[in-house]
Image (tube, rainbow, N blue to C red):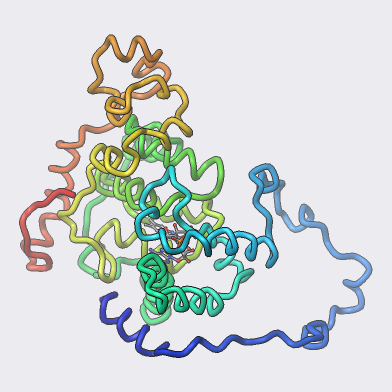
Length: 345
Ligand SMILES: Cc1cc2nc3c(=O)[nH]c(=O)nc-3n(C[C@H](O)[C@H](O)[C@H](O)COP(=O)(O)OP(=O)(O)OC[C@H]3O[C@@H](n4cnc5c(N)ncnc54)[C@H](O)[C@@H]3O)c2cc1C
């Protein structure tokens, strides 16, 4: 469980700062020598099979200096992380995931910076520090239980009967392309497809939608994220997907099913994030934008929204999908795995 792990993690760090490994002055001296035949002809990226990316267009830069620039930008926001991190239209998180994933920022340096703010009484820093601990938590899950890369952490969850066949494939494509008819899910997928990043709250919402609304195997979503996230990391991605599917270590219980409309109203109340990624819905009111199918025909007309024409009708009904999921996972309750009454978040 994460809570005792986190407690032990903090105790291990204790009151001290974490030791950092300094790079030697002359780094070239400790690197393996480049073989003579490679010196004159360094292969081009395209000859190695890499394709042109849009990272430059997005203003994303690699390397240590780019990581440091993002860190400088975040340090002054760290104290507000706790309040801001859940709202996708706000600049709440650090966006350092990609640098952590490629090692262009030092995790020990980040921990020390956060600890410094925690000691000064910053709530935001302590929430952020816990996120860094989650990263380690999932590392150690993967290291100690490598089977999670292909199987549910809780083996009984591998007996769940997922949707299959043409209908399931079509639902999957609609999810990937952001055409589910649920604006918050579609905006999240548009963010991923256009930028290679998805806000953490939306990873949970879009992930949960794939598993608990569309009834699709979490591994399908895991694979899609692995291909599209710039910060893709096997342990965190697998941990995140097993969390939404409820099959993971310390995951949410299976009967807790995110309501995408409620999540949207709560975390994107004014629809700012939705409007950014789904401009054809921009003319809807702050209320209607979360569930266009429930809007009055006059409002849809005035906003230029034609369901099924320039924005899809919902691919599933929330209440029915929820019932199907409770039935799909229901055998776990009978097998005594998770007691509890159906609850909705
Ligand atoms: C379905 C799903 C898939 C995910 N896939 C990945 C992935 O492939 N790679 C990845 O790094 N994170 C993944 N996460 C965790 C989290 O969403 C991202 O780490 C975070 O959104 C990255 O943005 P940030 O750097 O601005 O994070 P911040 O909020 O600033 O957090 C700082 C750092 O803490 C770590 N962190 C934060 N939350 C988590 C978490 N829940 N689990 C593990 N580490 C965390 C990350 O290294 C992150 O960069 C996933 C979460 C879910 C629900």
